[in-house]
Length: 370
Image (tube, rainbow, N blue to C red; front, side, top):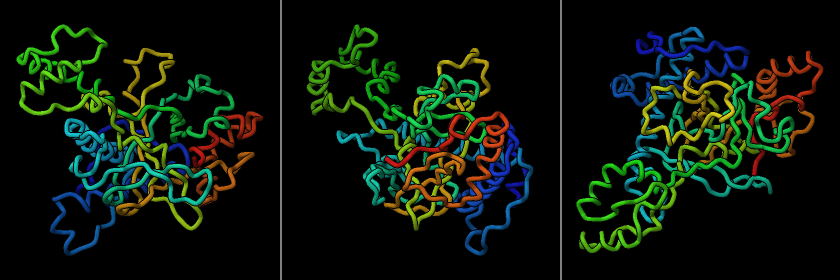
């Protein structure tokens, strides 16, 4: 496959653990498959042959390839969401038809029969292997910022929405706002809309921080246009369908995960108009001038590991630390060896320092079921 022979340009981050290297290899093959199954370039070949074996690449090249493919998908999906906000109806619900995409994640009561299951994330439409289904939202803390996480040093016990990337950047998905507030969104377009309202003789002299349009403005606009203008309740908020990673449950017994985590470094070259839809922000206690940090933000996305059909619930392997003192009764190991490899380096460092796994950050890679 010639498209794999060129290492994509980017920031190389060689794997530091056995499981990180394995995850890179899996993600690399998933994105190869996604390109094979979706690119028009291979449409004719797909009709007569199966996907060829991907060309082996060094870990740094795999990392760059993965980052570039995530970026392309994320920009496509967030761009679609950006356009859909201008068409959303009174119900403020985003659908795959509104996005003009093949899929759209959403939240509803989990299918898991357990009192702590709560809500879960589901799929409207279909997503193939290697599809980025969304972000894990929340505030991002760099490794040196661990003490700034609310609840330190026992935050992983009191906050079940903490997840760690392989590079030990930590995302706190608790109490994060994953909505786009429409008044703020429209305010960003104030130059264009303000010109229109100026021609209609409306909205003049609005002070910063006040609502863009008054009720009188809306009534006057309805009269001028000869039809009913959108109600004020539409200038409310819309759930970002690509920011639901903290709603994904660990699979119940008898089921397997259909998504896996993937670190994604949002670069400073990322389209400015799409940044508001990236549901991750660096902690304000960065400790350095933010403009000197190499990334806009180190984020985490979830990638489909197999075909996901319409109505399927999304499941993520939480990979709890097998050395943790307490593990919830609903948790079961999908692959005990995988969990051991995931925490091998951290546990070794903890033992060398005379600590237990409960003493260090992010002992639980993800949250408990709600």
